[in-house]
Length: 147
Image (cartoon, rainbow, N blue to C red):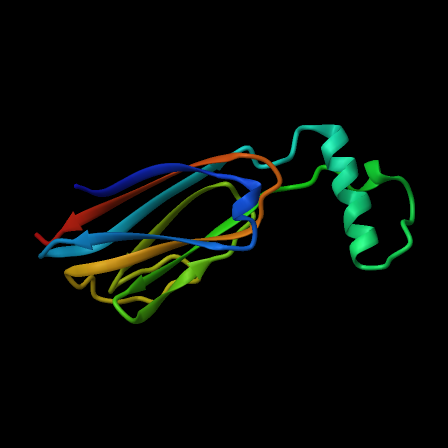
């Protein structure tokens, strides 16, 4: 059963922030399946990407070795973490922009602890590591009922 669904747009103004979404898990859920996607993964505007490479080298006081194209493509990176109340359940700090994760007492995807799925308020947090253009995202969370 679908227990949470949202979509949104993350802009460069959101870079280096966390975006929290609260959802409620009903009674008698034994597993959560999280589907998370965002797009685009890479900054497609070549001129803007080259300017970003130059800016990074200036920011960190480095001499550029090679040409900016050697450092392309530049990737957007938005990862997610999960909490149940004040308990940290884990995180998926992965490069993929199309992910699925399972959380349950018997099995949890790498990065998440195995745990009973307690009813109540949970948080899924998007960790915006690097966003250089507008990025659309979707999150769907399905709950598998106890039988």
